[in-house]
Image (cartoon, rainbow, N blue to C red; front, side, top):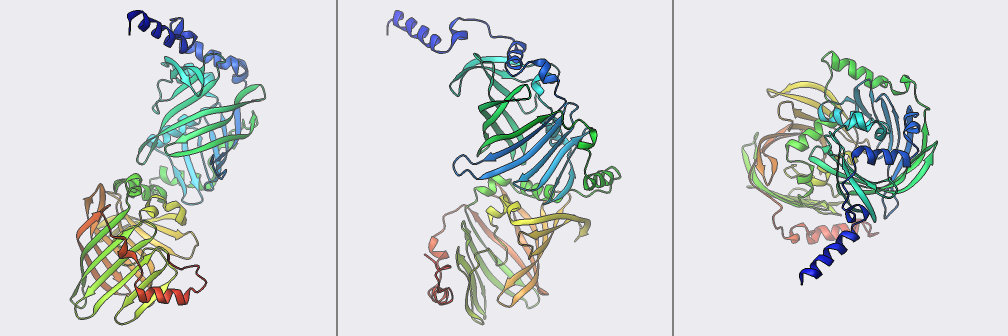
Length: 491
């Protein structure tokens, strides 16, 4: 390419980038960008006339149209806030005179601290662009670029712990996109909001539809209703009675940590929800000691996605006991009781493997969790947590170690061929396996019988022959006879 053609190419590129770059002009100051936005959306005086704001929002999956979020958000100019959520779970949270709090039907009340509190205080700012000079005095205009088909100024809002950035249409001054980093148990989640449409509400022009990306979650956020200056009374934002009681107990040093935080801490210190979500196969082998009789058995357990698992316990002189599931039919087989088939695919057995989906999405499986006490178990200080299943039929108790957050013991009813028996599992000697902390010793007390499991080999995400999960012929025959309607038939 000749030098002349190269220069022409550069000029064409500059011209296609937009008027600001083509003209070689200096980027505007942040005040110019923000003031243009304020003017385009109603004017600074109109913004500052709003002392409170109530917004009803709904988030839907763009493909299916399913509602995944529904909430009413009320904020005041003084920093108080009240967020009432109906979907995905009934919950409220807010800020009152600097106290950030939350309450959910699932886990009850809690007071937010640290980064969690800081994030709540930041999100309580109402119509904050009008106050950008006090909130983001060090903001910078970093460049000009095309976003969503519009030529925009890119602005970094500084200081902001969540590293907020906003893009404003050079032509209209309107907001096009904003991004931030949201803290979570597994680190920071990237959040992006792209404005799709606008509406006027009581003198202000505000986004009415946004496409939101929060990590891997994508949804369309629609503003159903907006009202200003309806909730200026402080009583609107006061702590609800359960939260007030909890806050008083915390100030007196008597409050127990929220059960939801305890469970999330266990997941985090065990490797994190993201690591569990990548867990697709598990193979655990070891020795099972029947302490009362002195018998020792070899046991092997395979598990994979879709509720498929197989476990064998080979006891010298007594034969092999087996159980498993192909994801549709659960079964058991032993020399004394013979074969059994049942429409249950839940992972059972000795609990030496975990259902990774249940760990990452545990909230979907329970109706209530509550911290009941701080007590000493085998010399370990533990938080005792009560867990109620989604259908309310099963209640389990878990003990989480206070010092490291790991699950130490679980007590629950277990379904067996002999009926429902009380079972206590104690998890010890955690070790690192493929980025996860895994208990290599499990003490079991089942209906008064004591067993001790030692894992000698744990393989995660390894290759497993799918044939191990297939139903034995006699089980397949039993299942075909019992489930004649085909509803529980196997492929």
